[in-house]
Amino acid sequence: MADMKLFLGCVIPNRLPFLEASSRKAFEKLGIETSDAPFSCCPDPVGFQTVSQDAWLAMGARNLALAESEGKDIVSLCNGCTQTLVAVNHELKHDEDKKAEVNEVLKKVNKSYNGGVKVKHFVEALAELGVDKIKNAVTKQLSNLKVACHPGCHFFRPSKIMNGNTQAIKDIVAATGATVIDYSEEELCCGNGATNTVKETGDAIAKKKIDSAKAAGANVLCVVCPACFQQLDTKREIPIVYLTELLALAMGETFDSLNMKFHAEKSLKNIL
Image (cartoon, rainbow, N blue to C red; front, side):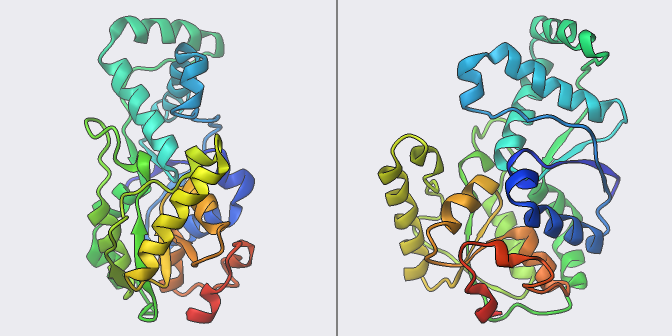
């Protein structure tokens, strides 16, 4: 797979560096080449726009321009970052006036956005790589794991521009030898956004999701978004695993080598 610029976002490198490590290890084992760039915050797809959509567009366009200047696409480890960069790309490609305004701003930092870069969520990149290649890289079947998948809100919304596919997550999980568990609240929000406003409401949403997964027989909940990871892991009711951690575990890494001791809920070590 062609080299892509790795977009880490803010939360993973600053608060969850072990998720970055697992992603780099999994990508290396799968032959997915990535390189770094001096990206800024994406910025946030919801709150930042309420302050200034023009600034949101300019910051997003600068990130896109960095990758575009090297002729490379972006692979993002975060749902929210993916949504922002896809949305900025979409809007500027379809609004020449906005594109011109943004480029006037980017001139100040010697950058230019032309719309020549594609943004992929890492699940999309893994799906393009193919389940067979993932299976071939697996050295340890995770047969003890019964995994409920949580895609998260920003993974496939708005549907007109996002390519999120929950089945793709499930197929990748199944490639590790784990059993995929379907549950009724699969597409329910994790509650993170609500927690920032009314903690009790966010906690209740998270509990409803976790209870649904556990009732269906899951002993692990797999996520693909750092905000979702934080929200659900801190409840300490079921082990939360990032999809790249799951892949790395199936490809020879261990609970300790992935520094999963930094999870709030550590009982996964006893299940593996």
